[in-house]
Length: 439
Image 1 (spheres, rainbow, N blue to C red):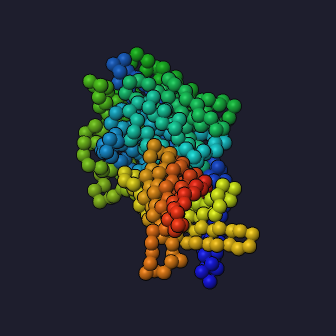
Image 2: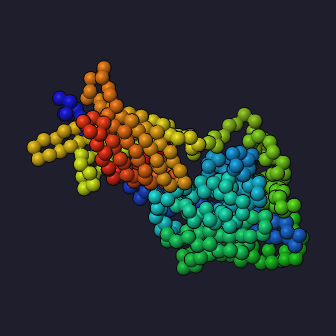
């Protein structure tokens, strides 16, 4: 009876695992379909005194949105974000080090994510860069360490990225057909690839806006420009769908960034913000339609730090006998080791019979270097009477678990198992494959 019950448990776990994998494959297929975003334009100018000016027209379906100020915390830079989809999905922003990042949409191209590298969806990477990067060079280095997902599944369009820092460096980062391209020294960005002119832009005004903005910026050469000059250029290339025009001003004073922000809304009024002073306050935000500060509105900015994590994994008979199936539920906190419960189903088959054992226990694991995982667990055999539950197994895992910000992460690890139920403790090794899901 116990064997039949355990066999049923194995079948249920395998069915759940198979369906989750099928769901993920179908979801990734859907994700590769393009998602549309209207025309946007980014311009950049540097005055002779070193003052940096970055402007952007945001062309969107709605003028609703938030201007979010997040002060520095836990060695992360303070930053201001312009967003409609939440703090983890900004369209543009700048940090307290004077690094600015913004996006514009581009046509579809094939980019298959490598889920064994830390994976971000296309808008999430903006916030991570602003939190951790001080200049263009460090931001580009972070892009090279990440796998980026574009597409409809997570509500993110195909985009390319404009970077500028207080030292006068700029770069455009593009992902084209699974290749990362970095174009340095650019001062205009619209909606066509700079590294792949063979891909025609979806937006018919992209190239004309690009050329017009270039010409207007050339007129500012050797001129001490103001943010209103940048807003004037943006007005000249404005589209019917433009809902915001922004101009960041970065002064490099004693090797410290002093940042200002000018925002023009649909009513043509211009609101200015002293970003440096705003970031000295607690986290707060403004309504992008009225520019009024919202005092009773809360924003979750810890979404990627505290979650539950479900792990399902299997060993394969080619590598081990008996086979193992594991199911674990962990409390996933970014700072401390994760702790949770885990069940192990061990299935030993011979030509004549099959022996199945069920173990349950506690697992403690630690995620490090954004890519790897260590874990140790202690387990008890549940087929033993409840009044007598001696320690049965001690496990130790080492393997790959990328720090993906999407719900799915692949698992590949080597598990060593010390079986204490034998007369002489027996050590076995298993190569495990599986999937993790955050919620």
